[in-house]
Structures are given as structure tokens and as C-alpha cells.
Length: 231
Figure 1 (spheres, rainbow, N blue to C red):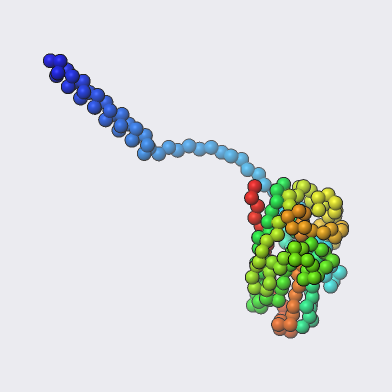
Figure 2 (cartoon, rainbow, N blue to C red):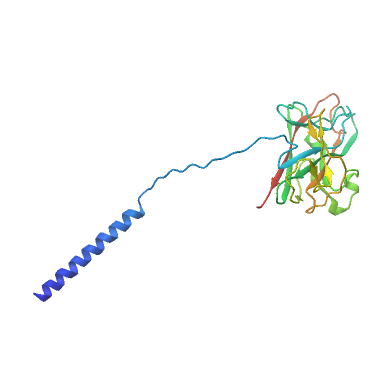
């Protein structure tokens, strides 16, 4: 009788263990659903007032800013180079500045140049990131310049130091960037020196060589800068 009772107890234990095992397995493969709402908010601002800002300086042949906003409602930026004679190499050493307003450093990791319409003029452009607004980039010291677009490919990177989230200045607070009411864009009121990794801005130089271009042809397209930040 004792042995039978012992056997009976063992069987009940095994059944109980099997039952627990099934319950755990069932919980592991069950699917659960839930809902939660998280609010969001963002604003759309002018390109001269964003967390990465484009600030004009050089003038074009028509006396207006080379970098300008033609329609203040759409706020689309455009570089207006005008008519360049065949065979000329024209350089704007401070076409504009790129300014970081984020509270952390941002890398300019590359640039792509694309064309619109039937005529490809991308190979006629050279784009430099460099230190001195009034110097031709090839003449600067090696650490003060970067040929980021050579006419066909993008190279290297430039580090913008953390900014101060203030669209009215650059280079910390040392250089004002007032509003140009005619061209609807902010411009640099000075020409401070940019340093890779240490200043919140860099000067962009653009050169156009028309020796290989076709006379009487209009070339158009867009330049896209690439940025990366690790926060």
C-alpha cells in the first residue's frame, strides 16, 4: 500500500510538472498588443536660420548676393553665377559659409553635384572648403583647405565645431550675420578665419572653368552637401 501510494504521488508530481511546462511555453509564444501616443513637434525655418545655416558673402555680377533666395515664400536657395565667357576660370572664394548651430560638432562628409536639363556642367565646377574668405583655396596651407569636389568625385571631410543656436552670429558670437532684405538671406558681416574642428563655420569656394563648355549653352543643377553628427 505504501509503495502504491508512493507511485501515486510520483505520478501526480509528473503531471503537475508537465502542466507547468505547457503553461510557460504557451506564455512564451503568445502575442501581446498595446498602444501609446507620443506627441511631436517641428518647425520649418529659413535656410539661413536652421541648425545648419547657409550664410551669404560674395556678390554676383549683377551686384546681388551670389547665394540668394529668389522667392521668399518657398525659401529655395540658388547660386546665380550669371554669364561667364567661354574659356574663363571664375572663382568665388567666399561663395557662402556653412554654419553649425547644433550643440555638438557636425561633420561635412561629402558633396554631390548634379545637373538638370540636357546639359551636364558638373565637371566644370570645383568646390573647396577652406579657412580664409579672401584667399584662393589652392594657395592656402594644406590644413586650411579641402577640395571636396574635384569635378567628378567627392573627397575628405571637414568638422564644424558646436554652435550656439543663434542665427544672428557665427564664429561663436564674434561675427554678426544680419539679414539682407533684398536677397532674403543672412550674410556674414566679417571674414573670420575658419579652422577645421575648432570653429562653427567654414567658407565655401566655388570655381567654374568654362574652357570645356559649349558657347551659348546654359548649365544648371544643384549642389548637395552631406552631413553627419554623432551625439
